[in-house]
Amino acid sequence: MSASELPPEFREQLNHVTGRRSRIVVEHILEHGFITTDDLEQIYGYMHPPRAVRDVREQGIPIETYRIRSPDGRNIAAYRFGNPEEVREGQSGGRITFPRKFKLALFDQQDGKCAICNGLFANRELQIDHRIPYEIAGDVNYSEDDTTAYLLLCGSCNRAKSWSCEHCPNWQGKKEIVCRECYWAQPTSYSHVATREVRRADLIWKGEDEMRTYSHIAASSTQAKQSIPDYIKGLLKDIITSVVRLFV
Image (cartoon, rainbow, N blue to C red):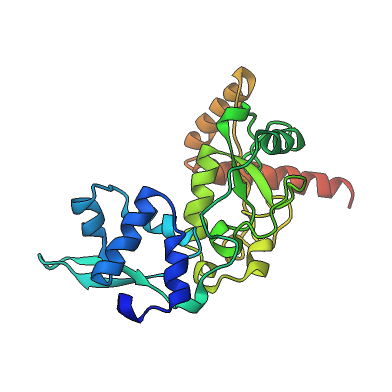
């Protein structure tokens, strides 16, 4: 669909897209019909093109990804506007800026811990994230007095959550109910991890005593010729089996 064929309502929505990187993507697609990863890297100097496109999607604008051949024959990603009817309400203008007291409320509720790995962090080291990805639900129901739709994550866990969500089949399906039952939305009560029927536990060892324990586990796992996760699961299985036998 050419720029002249876009519905007036959609053009108006594009006018509300903010941010230099987002505007570059929008204006380039309006002028050329699409933008490629090479365009973003070579013309505009963005070393992570998908992030620039995601900025636009986060503002409610539907963007389709497809593959084309570059001038030198490589298979690269290209992006164009999607169905204008799929503009998402509540996302115009991008993510909201959370007040300081909102983050402090979350920090107190989580006792200063990351919701995923349970590691203890300073307030500045934790990041507010949506339980259900912004790209799926937006900030439609945001209220400064209600923190239930958000959680605090350390940088590593936030990046892991983002990667998992972006590669989840529901990233295209966009069903909120699927996200609500996911590990990344409810780490303590979930039925799947990015639609996969698995269970997950993220652990972090911090402080002298815990680091010493970890070193013992690492040495023992090496001796047993097992990975650390497999070794820990084996230990837990043996402990649980022993406890169960006591009550049988």
